[in-house]
Image (cartoon, rainbow, N blue to C red):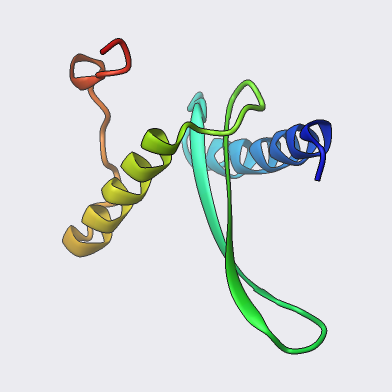
Length: 94
């Protein structure tokens, strides 16, 4: 896929994710996401695929994606789905 196609795909996914959350969280703004999907080909082969994105239509950096996955695993383990992110803990400037 070309970069422009990836960006269009990310923007479409972001719009759908934003709409889904807006139904439950009035005023919530989705700023980043990591989607994992199981894909089955017409030949019956299955594999996992992933897509990432942010509100600007860009893909996440690898460390951001890993952070999302780490937080998701912890949320599943603890069954706490509302993980809060503190800007004080943001190390993006380092």
